[in-house]
Length: 385
Image 1: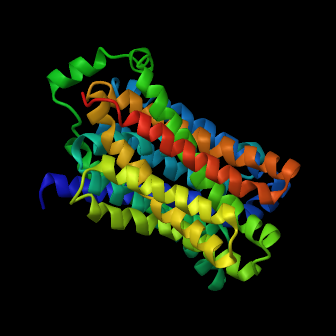
Image 2: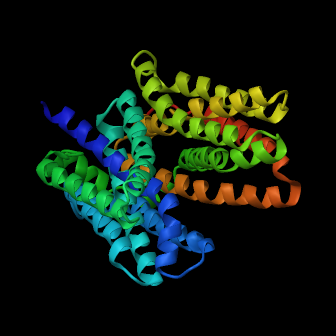
Image 3: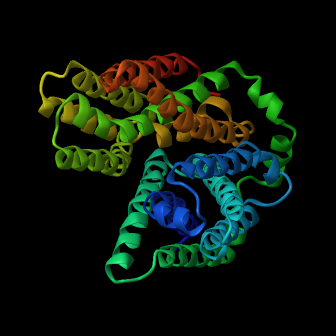
């Protein structure tokens, strides 16, 4: 097996490892909150701590890479996430869990940004889409493994022991591949090190693509979080039916990335992105118009399926639009913008729902869909570097 195939497979494993703890927390939280004697409503504190760690390492990733090699950063970050996951098992105090969540986010942010930087430079758009599909595999597998252990009579913490052990095994893979992760030769590295974060953030187009990532991730997470409530409350869909189709929505994000990975072997990312973003608008319009429950549910599926290739395909275009020297900085900005959008916009829609009712949210989804499409059309006018 050649070097590139080894690194592709290792990247896929790393993105599975990113998804595993994210999917695990939602089902494990009632047990963790009981262990440390806090209310279920304190989950928001834990998520904010996780977000803080993620933003810290993702935004500073290019600076860190000037101090240590990419292989070393990936190795250390994977060990950090493993120790943090075990922290959820052994720590007995609430503040300890908060700290563990911060470092789990920090390790995840470093892995996410670092591999996206490498993938943008070295992998095709197809591979980048498949890479992000493996995050979905991890996020789906976490709750499944947790539930399976409960079925077999194991205590909740064995789910974290299992996931933490998997993280350690992946860290061992990074030990074996550490020297293969070479992002730039010495001349390119010297040029990139002369580019500061401020140099990159001053490029006007950077703010536009950050806005796309902010809105895109906010839309993706908002549809996933709020569709169930919209369907059962505003559309009178049966709870079991609504739950099934929201599950299908999340599954379609993974399936879509696999499918469009093959499509990208035939066409380039820019026309594909234009087509799928129009598809997202159509899906949001079907949900908003409320012609029938069948069409509303189909609209939710369309949004998931057509949103799938947006994030990875845009990541693959960063070098095309901004060049190799600025790419590490800009990808860090984009990951940070996506994390903020995924936290802020769903919460904001919660306030809208409280004031205007859940029936107003499909209009918000439609507005966000149009916004992402409009911003991408504007970005597509930028000439390649």
